[in-house]
Image (cartoon, rainbow, N blue to C red):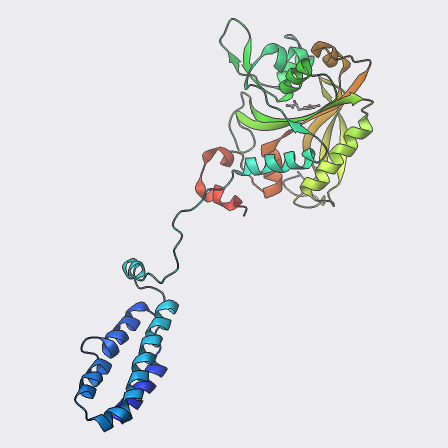
Length: 339
Ligand code: DAH
């Protein structure tokens, strides 16, 4: 009998398995009701006291070794099926609830707000259905102004002129009407324009407007603030240039370009081989806009800027089609998980 016990001890020690079913088969073969070790214990009971003394310890250690081996293997092998995994309560829990992730536009919006909030900018919001005064007229764009053609507006059928706001600049007006300087705020939100939907244009998109009004705010402050933002957002190696431009509500006005984020300025398809990408409009608030909003233009000066969130997200993440942002395809959205 001792030879049998020793042979089984070796078998137990050498046994390997990499699936749950093989471990279970070994348990039954060794320790099941008709298992070899169980049978050895049955035989053991029939032995005389001297033999019992000689064999008892060896038989017990065979049983213990077999039990330990089974426990160890159960923890290390993969379950064969979901049912066996569920039956084995010693298995670590399998997470089955997948948490959601933020939309890439929200991620970029939060990044932008985070950078400007370090400079003391707060966040303010305004309505998406806007009256003509706040979207256009107060911003130096009266009804017959040619600059209205820059934005294809959705008008709402109502005796008073209402529009789906075409720009978040409308929030500047609301803020300045309610609050005297110092003002330092960002206004993120959705805007609408009657554009054919394509990879590069959509009838709805998002902007972030910035406004800074105080004593002696200068163009140098504007340039420094935007340089800081762009270096934080795109990286410190990014180059910046400002081109003179026109917006009805700022004078002087500029457009801001950054060195192409894909080719670092060497020239590629995305930057149309110019090495530069336009990222926002900006300028010094026109004194007439201050007067329209009840702010003393002789005492205060300020700057404003406006950027498209989709555009920044496309450049940052290398997204080629604007429509992806609005389709809610999980294969797209799941690529923007941040822990
Ligand atoms: N509202 C402009 C647009 O939608 C963007 C813009 C340009 C905003 C210059 C500004 C600015 O505040 O100063 O195209």
